[in-house]
Amino acid sequence: MSDPTSDPEMDDIETGTLPLDAWHRARGARMVAFAGYHMPIQYDGIMAEHLWTRTSAGLFDVSHMGQLLLSGDGVVEALEKMLPADVASLGEGRMRYSLLLNETGGILDDLMLTRRADGYYMVVNGATKYDDIAHILDNLEDEITLNHMDEQALLAVQGPKAVEALARIVPGVERLVFMTAGAFDWDGVPLWISRSGYTGEDGCEISLPAEAAEAFAERLCQEPEVKPIGLGARDSLRLEAGLPLYGHDLDPETSPVTADLGFALSKRRREEGGFLGAEPILAERAAGPLFKRVGLFVEGRQPVREGARVLEAIDGVEGRVTSGGFSPSLQRSIAMAYVPAVLANPGSKIDIEQRGKRFAAEVTAMPFVPHQYVRKGA
Image (cartoon, rainbow, N blue to C red; front, side):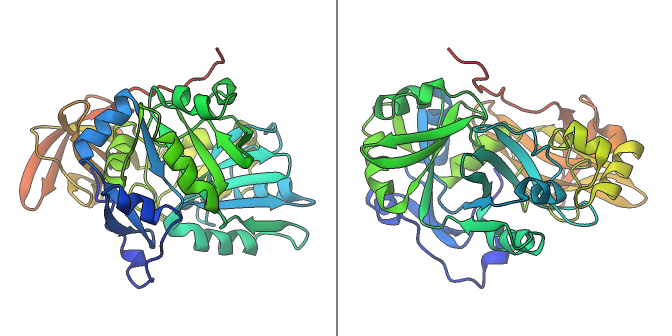
């Protein structure tokens, strides 16, 4: 697992508290500084929490994420200038994964975008949200409003029994399918719920007023399937699911093509361009990238970590491991890395060096653990 407590960009920022801070501490969570906030890294242990989520349902506090709402005349056109997504065709209640890009095609952040009746709801990473807001404002006309919904908490319930448990409290959520969302009510509390998440499991993310977060979390954890889960297991779960983490696997020097996120470039946008960074991205897509993000099975049980060297190089430039750890589900060491594109096919052999020790690895398809998303209604 990559280290979720390491965030050098946040070192000089005062650590804040989230709405569930006292609730986490009362439940015995070990708290760490992450993305500018005190957050729970574990309760009962990362391995146990990881496996519980894979077999039952885990509750994650992700209130550090940035929740934004964009609205006003010309909002679709403005979003399409920033994002490579086909925003115009996005139906109400539908979600898309997309990317904030710079002029050279590097990734400033990855995000989820949902069309709502009142505008376009965007969830961005916690450590980058203020930079994201500044970047978005720089690219918006005055007619468009950006609302930072900092009065909202965000919770995620993930696992094969997550929706079943949530539906007892919020009837109707079971009718959602993967990458759809809608408005719901819990005892008079307005909820915005999407069937999505960051573990590879089925589940939902719930946006709700911060003052209601503790009562809702407490009620959800009364369901026998649900336990609170910390950042440590969230990181190992997303790694098994092959999902990149911004600031580790993605950064401003890395393009969507190199990061193997070509699916985020909608077909119409690939053909028409017109988004920030389009020219270098589409040129790289046509020529093929020099390096590519891949999954690795690493020989032995010792994990390789972010920063380990991939010894295979192009013109003296080596690849690098960006996330790595021991997989609780597979009981073996896994990693994500950037390797020369000629070695990106499954089965290719890779050599890694970490702290003077060499490791043998083999490129493998991702996800490491199959996704369990529910794409069709019952």
